[in-house]
Length: 512
Image (cartoon, rainbow, N blue to C red; front, side, top):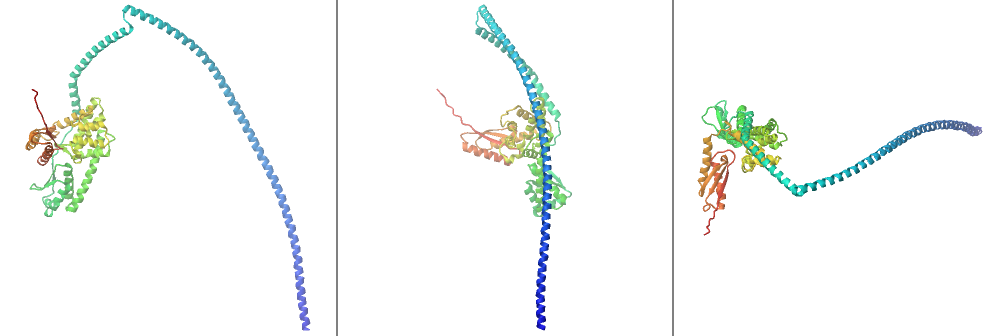
């Protein structure tokens, strides 16, 4: 029973499963049929919508084409109208040109007729002139060439006589007025450039707050003062003079460096070799900068543009140089002013005269950098600075070391002489000057074989004449060096002294 029941349950379970499967299959078919119908409807709707969209796009495209067609037709009408206007203007211009051509043809015919008429008249005049010429030749008995030569000769003699008379008259007037005019020009220049002048010496004094400061300046075993002297290249004299240190040296730049350095050390109170080196170096750099500043200032005061930085620096160095006690920078500016004023009076180049005057003594500020007279050294420097050949020649010739090649060169010589020779300009007295010349000649005459010697160019050159039987050519070279060395060691003088040894050989014979 239980088995039957079990089998029945199994059969019922199988049947229920089969029934469930059949039911699910039937339901699936129903769902599939419904999905197909929905997809068909969707496709049909899409087709209808696409067809409507297509028709809409076709309508828009037709409208756009119509608009573009209308615009193109309007543009073509405008272009056609513009071309018609241009064609009309061209036709009008052609008509105007035709009219002008007609007028020109008429004028050309008139001119041709006039030209023919002129040619005819020229022929008539030529024939008439030829007949008159032959008649004149017949009457005078001279040919045309002979008459022309005679006329030119008479005219030449008359012109030569008149020109000679005029030249003599001009020369006479020039002689009468030249001296007066020259004096007026020089006096005007001096009056307009009158300036005070303070002569300079080779000694500088530095005041001390007390005599105790002398010991601190000297230092232990003199190390401080030795350091100062070695760094600045001057002599410092500390004697019994109360509260004063004397700085002695021929180079004004070194004296100025020493003076400023010592004043700063005294004010600071710290005086030892390391501090001295620091202060001296700082003062030296400041003075170097001041040189360029002074050059720029001088150029600006005189209104001289376009000078190179090196030239301005060389000009500024002259502030610390002196010649016969006269400050060289002040002298150069004075020469520039004098030359500029005189150039203006004489209708010369004022700017060139001022430029040359300011630069004429730059060689004095750099004598250690070159050899020879300061004028030649200055000319070489100016050439390196890019100055033109006229300025270079003015500098080289202001003491006649070279021949002057311009009126400005002679003008600078005059201005230089005025600045140097006016009262109070230079400190050296006539007695001192003559004594220095005498010492130069005495030194040269002290050498064996020297026959004569002459100090010339204000003591800037000494010419030594030697006996040719005592001094050979080789010995003449060594003699010049020995004389120059002795002058350097025994005399003090501004600038340089050129020593020229002249050995002359003369051979004399007689024809009997």
